[in-house]
Image (cartoon, rainbow, N blue to C red; front, side, top):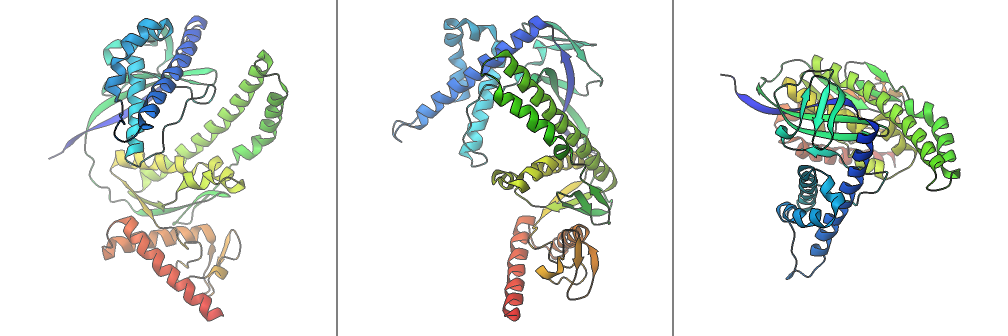
Length: 400
């Protein structure tokens, strides 16, 4: 008997507001940014008190205070109340993630960097009629609805991407829970020179969109630095930088969607490295810039949700010494990694592309964890890491 499950699916459409509507939308962005910072300051003040007097306002408390705030300041009353309330709910979720150690303390929203989305959470307050979107207090706007909505529409969020506006519609779909897939297992090794190399021997080169646009980006950013702050010419220069960055981001996402869709359709289980990509990027430097340009984290996100929809699974295994381990005999030695692309095992003489060899090592670790019943993947990864450290210490002591 098939079991029905509720899933959420988002549809993103381009929206073309009139100049008057766009001016109002930008005014709403400024108001919501002020509301976020005001509510965030209220929570920080409550958090900064002594433990006996400490009080954490909830989203319900702050939503109740909206009535007095909107009555005193007319620019808050111009924004639909549901949109303001949803922003406070998002702030509360951010604080809850902080309290449960899932994220850091929420940040202030800065103008030009953290523009909030305008989310209408009630489906009866908005609707799409053909190629017309009707949003509260805005009236009809032209929308390019190139796909038909599926399921029950729930929320509609207007978000600006530079000088373009988009509407994201979240729908709730009741579908049959897909059975586990039996397609082959494949492992992916992510890199900078090559986006991925899989355990079947395929290597996908990095198109290097960011590197090709670096000269134009640097020139455009120098123009911004020479313009007077607050001037119209500075805003035009910043808009050019934004358009160049947006083009690079969309080129990268297009390539990543193609890669993730290919592997999600052809394989039931995909094995990847358990890397803390955000921490690696936070360190800074040339490698961090290259990792961000390739989009390691974005690729994993796409693989995860695409495999979940089709009944597949994504497994993350410990990457420790995978570039120094031979996929044929299991010998660990730093000398086997001759160069960025070459791997020659000093024990058995295996000659293989270094990234392909690493992908096959990841696949063998995932198979061993499943066969030996080593518990969860993180627990098995820790045990594998300890064993490899022992092997490395023995190799170093014998060399001495």
